[in-house]
Length: 263
Ligand code: 13P
Image 1 (cartoon, rainbow, N blue to C red):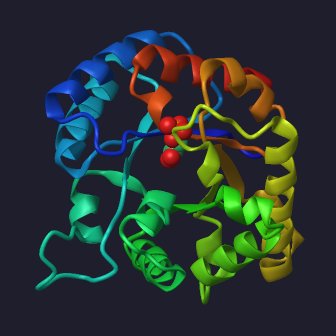
Image 2: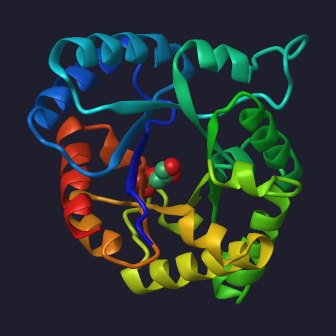
């Protein structure tokens, strides 16, 4: 199955507009002349979306830059109205946002997002034709307690409840074991591959083998330039969702380069 790898930078609560500008200039100069057969996505904080959109638009027009897609890190499950602090999917569309990260473990554990909330956000995102990057993953206690498969199955089934096969085709899944996020501990490629194959099998059970074969599943959790190639060489790993190492243009670039070569 030919799945185009997708490398997404999740900046979390880092980089306002001016740092975003510096980063993009530097990344574009590194990408100049290269033509990786992969998709590149940047998810800045909301307040930096306008700057990112502006710069990418100018860069694409001026120098035929490697197309970079824009992602938001969250969206509201509501359309508009009295929801202080929230941002709607239609507002995101105005900033040329194509992807939205949903269900990240930090949103689940710190902000209390449940599978039902994540499911509502996924459906709202699809109404506006945004592509969800749907994150799932187990804690260390869950893994050590033998609950890996149960946790993943529950998150997948809950998050994708009543999502059509047509909409599934526009979703990217990100498997991010919580114990590997920001810890410097990466899942071994064998652990990651095993989990990814399981995720694909659950999706196959829900939507059939064809849909499962087409969906892209990113790995996230301490991805670095020196482990990207090995992870991306695994048959069921189709890219990476990168936190810490995406904050430096050089390491993000090296992850894309090393990962694309082995994918
Ligand atoms: P790190 O790459 O910093 O471990 O973060 C992973 C992550 O949470 C990406 O969404």
